[in-house]
Image (cartoon, rainbow, N blue to C red; front, top):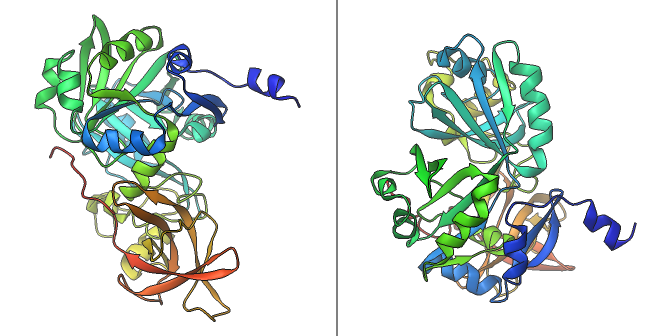
Length: 382
């Protein structure tokens, strides 16, 4: 297949023209043509988000609106609890929650954001999973709920310490929002949904708005000298420093929430002894691991040299050990910490945080220090 033919088969977001105008290097990602970086480069983009505000086009993500067929949001909440191990019934209007679609083996189908908006729920899903998620949600929830896929909506993420000031110029009401709040507001006379959240470790917002207005809103935000367009490359290094999972690398259908260190996302009411314990896919295995621990654990990894250790590198207990004790799932250079950082899964029987293990780097064993996550302090507005 030629590159020309392949390119024509890629979908484009509503900001495609703006990306091209700004000189973005476009790459295939999850079936879309997406900007990986702009002329300033990934390093400067990353540091700009940490210092000011970065605008990300995440319109490739899936957006779904879930409603109860009977008109009772409680029914929709209980239906959603049949596919995620989170407390959705207790999620009050105007708030959202990180959630995991689990399978019968306790693995993760996808990680999501679920927001409660009055009598409906808005789900944001990963781009590569959204088709499978839609099919699964329809199969699992259609008797009780309607599922509307919102391909007519774009999604922008504004992240960094300057994000509030930049967005408040267009939406003054967002100043009172706190982390994981969700609000229906107007921007430039267009109705949209704003959450105070993101995936960089910084304070910030995600804005769901009609695709037809996305470019105009993005251009207006970029009029602020603190705001710069940021590509997928810096998005990845930012989330890695923040210790956040990338589905398909750090999370997959064979990895449980407990192994991934995401047990904080499972509220007490869904755990053993809780008022609505279990009754989600993989509950037996996940609840057992919550009580007894998992055989492996996602850990932070700090290479002791300057060379990054990448996804797929095998991990060993010492320089001469034959048995593999884990694998790196994400790795690269962390511009904010000025050092390489990585995450991976390590068997629980091995060294605790602070201990030294080794990664195979092109046939050479290099030392890594086991580290707590995240690698940088988060700045969410609580």
